[in-house]
Length: 466
Image 1 (cartoon, rainbow, N blue to C red):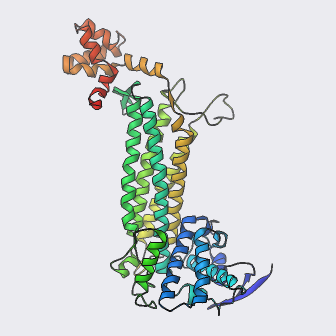
Image 2 (cartoon, rainbow, N blue to C red; image 1 turned 45 degrees about the vertical axis):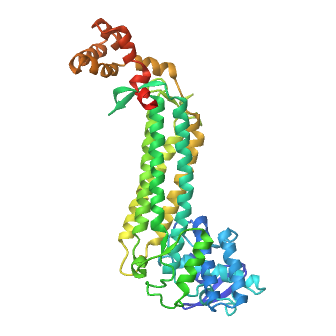
Image 3 (tube, rainbow, N blue to C red; image 1 turned 90 degrees about the vertical axis):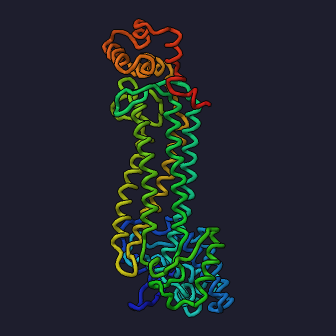
């Protein structure tokens, strides 16, 4: 392999001649062969880094800190990084020491060498375009990296909001389709009172829609950034007007309502916003996982279980049992939820583990959250497309089960009182007839009884329609 020699404060190091990255990235590749997942896999993060570097370059150019020639090349390279043309050059591992320094240096070197190429110069000609003196001017990893992470998470939230809203709509559509199909509700896995399939599925839709507001709430925390803080929040090495100009450009580039943190020292050391976002993501997946538990229970069987819902068959369920089909899509969502819940603990401990003016553990926070948002959005899309939109029901089985269930006795309590209704329920459970037959035998008027036991009345649909 042809190489070029680059130097840093530790001495010389060989770098592949064709690579846009340089010596700092090369050392990080040696130091952190951990997850096998390069930063370039997180498209939102790379795009955000490109946006931050672009905003910085524009601010520095306006302030006379970057001449027109260098600025034009750096601007073009940063735009390419933002657009995804250089993702394969962001090669450092997502798990790294140094509070994200390796990621920032990787981005700096890629932009610098691509800018050199644009200028017709060979990679590594850093006297012309330097990763630190030019690309990283007025910046530090400690304000670039957390700002980029926040912007990346805003994009991740957008994606999950779309998937969550679409999944809720799918449940709502199925709820409309089965609005009046009667069934028995359950509490503590025991028969409770009548309801409809539409009400059950509609509740899933509402449960998910509630989370859209929580996701939206978390945006405001992420829009407060510490750009311009440099190392610890004092703004050392930055032009006095850099912060204002860079933030203005960044807001315009990203289309986000970004604002400057009120106290840059606090903002550089505090990672509470990431804990909050992680908690919101956990809440979303906990609710979705509970829904998937219900889908698996309601579709259990098909002969020896509940058998009320029919989930679309997606694959053979056994290597030994012919004809077996498992609820694999809800099971997949459950596992994504378990991973996110565990990662929330990682984010919590990483936030707690920060010391003094900086939290060194933001890389694992960043990776955990971006991975969690991506997996959750993909899982929700699969749940909607491969499961929810194809749900059907056994209407005859449900109607027969609801009509013969002893829980119907609850509907008689306004007419007969609790004690008399309880006796009817016990008799029905003892096999001495169904609730309707026993109530008629006890002297209840047939017309009044039929009205009381109408599925629409039992499920309170009449009042809801009003």
